[in-house]
Image 1: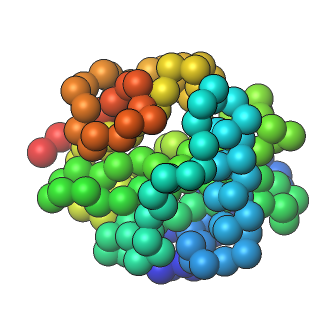
Image 2 (image 1 turned 30 degrees about the vertical axis):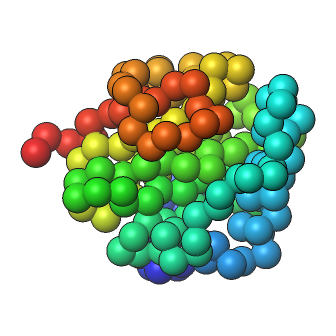
Length: 170
């Protein structure tokens, strides 16, 4: 699913004006939201810094390796999320971020749903993710979506929780 392919624009539509679609990781909107995501983590997490942060290579976020999705509200990019195949049948949800001005409207839940559909389209039946307990809203979203805690699968020193959800039966 190259940017503009696979998930059709509108496939993640929430209501009039909000649309979730795949984009190139090199797009200006993607770069801005990913920068905002890192800035938000730095503000919210005591001791977390961008220094030492390892970002995904752009080719990891395009099919067949993955996908980067953005949510647009009235034409403005307000949320992002990515999915990356980490092993046969297993995808990792990454870079989930909703801009503060767009929070509380269900965009994060819709974005997670579309990311899971993208993982299935990439041939995966399990989604994993890591997070940290201080991001209470994110942790609540993941748990309410059916993610359950598992052991550390990726060695991320910034994570305090690792979760997984079966997307479809094998």
